[in-house]
Image (cartoon, rainbow, N blue to C red):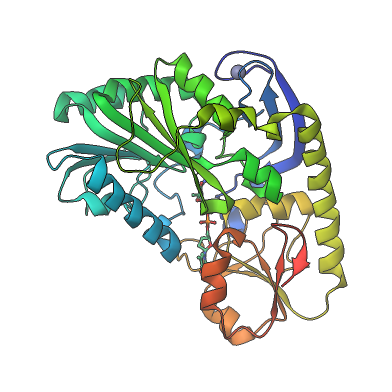
Amino acid sequence: MNCRICNGQLSKFLDLGQQPIANRFLLESEFDSEFFYQLEVGICNDCSMIQLVNLIPPDELFGQDYPFFSSTSTFMTNHFQMFADEIKAHLLPPDGFIVEVGCNDGTFLKNFTDFLHMGVDPSTLSNEFMALKEFFNKRTADWIVGMMGTADVVYAANTVCHIPDLNEFFQATRALLSPDGFLIFEDPYWGAIVRKGSFDQIYDEHVYYFTVTAIKNVVEMNGLRLLGVSPLETHGGSLRYYVGKQQKEIPGTGVTQAINRWSASEICTHLAKLSSFSKSVHLTRDKLRTLLSSLSGQIVGYGATSKSTTTLNYCGIGPDTLDYITDTTPDKQGKFSPGMHIPIVHPDKFYKDRPDYALLLAWNHITEILKKETEFRGKFVLYVPGVKIL
Ligand code: DWN
Ligand code: ZN
């Protein structure tokens, strides 16, 4: 298998077994026709990009019925609003043009309805903001430039790591950006995945697991420059990257440009570190299974996340262990979890049942969830970071 970016040789270091499509919550009538693939991860020996070995084509993953909505988290809604304020204050002139790639339900872009704006997303569902219901690529970038001109800011949150053809993505962005414009994107950081043991960030939609070194390589291969990097708390630890056509300061953001320092300290890509990460993932599975089987009383899951598909299938946790998974997303309720077929229910059932334990599958929202669930008398079971009862 070769690298999707530079064609270098991939070294496989992790196998998470047979997995179904992470975000395809299904009806009982669909169980028999469910699709599975081998979930494996490798690192490119040349450009050091960490990536999935086998790929599900994006048009099978992101369509009309994509069930994830950013606005289900108050924390994420605030996160996007705060960054929108920063962009408006420092990076986008009053007559500027902003494009969001992967705009989802508009949680970020709705902050820019007073500006010239455009979202691009094949699964977007809203008429509250301007959006092109398409994948972002060279063709759609050229179309936007033809219709609206070049963009001052192109933003993408938790989207770039989903795009298989990253060379085309950066080429398309280069065509779309004005000479002084900024591409800003944020995605989970591989260093944080290793540190926290959050192996469940690995699933079909996440084609890549970024490091500063690999991003610097791919950005430069496509004639752009990495101008700055800033760490974020979101999704268990992410990085926000600032990219431009020329070397320049990023006004008002407080972003340090210590890119070389970041890259030099990235031991998370050393082969020994990768192999010890794989071992620790297997250990987490064993510990979690042992812990769950030692518990008595009712156990349920909390948050039917995409991530949980990896956890539940890799660890073999099914409806014999978790009675159901509670989730606030109406599109998921009444369906079953991919692969393990655990029923997804409305939170009302969780409040009525008062289970003894809840396996926190939405661990990245722990602060928000603990603040909200003060009436919960059972205990949360955690597996990121580390297996424990809270
Ligand atoms: O990268 C991606 C991220 C941004 O979003 C996508 N590939 C898909 C998706 O991943 P995820 O499904 O793992 O994201 P979340 O944000 O961890 O999903 C949270 C889930 O938990 C949602 O289904 C909503 C639910 N939830 C809940 O039931 N009660 C969330 C909160 C905060 C709650 O209080
Ligand atoms: Zn490569």
